[in-house]
View 1 (tube, rainbow, N blue to C red):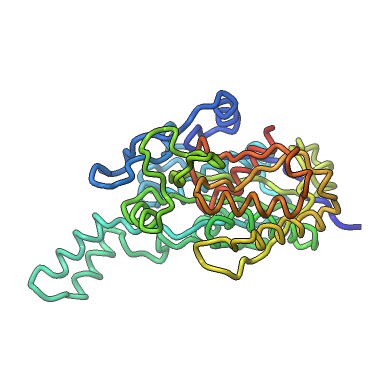
View 2 (cartoon, rainbow, N blue to C red):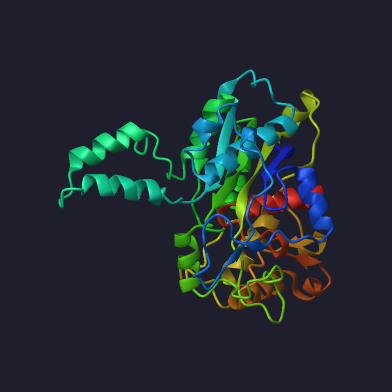
Length: 368
């Protein structure tokens, strides 16, 4: 019999709040986290809005705020969300067998601190030519370069393993918007295969940065409305998405293991599907092929029929092409039933959390 995988802990840091209950309450109230960008001066950019994480305390990350201030926002978000998930699951004490406890995250690339980097370059080129010795010395002195490159996407997963004494499988998946969804599916498979009993799984990201804003704008996928109603998935007048940031991490656990320790069970992860568009790096297949293949695989894995699904939390980016293609893909899977199934997108209120969006959507579904 296949080992069953359940969710026993939830944690998040989002533009709508840094607690799961706060996030859920504000979603129910229909509140939008979208507003003017405060992380940097976006006054000269065509896009000047985002869904930023504002009301959270860096002490959620650790007891040494100065140490953590050197880390990218996605690392801070991942650590804080994971700590909340572990607390929610009642796992403050490390599991008896560290080899049965692993980490699976979906985090993306981050941007170096260009202000610090610029000052280093100014010192290194002070005489007109680049002086590598000066650059290396100053970098090591101020901590810019260390054995832990802060912009590496796999760093949060490594940190979490050390924090929670998780000696089991450890991986980070960088696959754009599906990163955390893939991390969740792989974590569940690891438990099913018997390689672990508990997995921390989810994702984190922050691309609210001049480079992130510029890159997405050049792809013509960001809304230029510059108001809190800009993110409107599946709306007739949609014109793109709004960047968000944050993290969502859950504790996945083998069912018998969870019951034995009396854990609260939020839900069961019954199926997972993965497929490739094999089309273009920035576009879904125009016939919805990748989407329909992925959903069908998830249904097969869960041993469910399409008519047993009563809600779809859609990717729903609010771009003209994505929403059209996603709708087409869902119609391929569900047929006439597609018109009867409620479909919505969390992004309308929290923006697009890029690599972390799938994990956040799972938390929202479990809360509902």
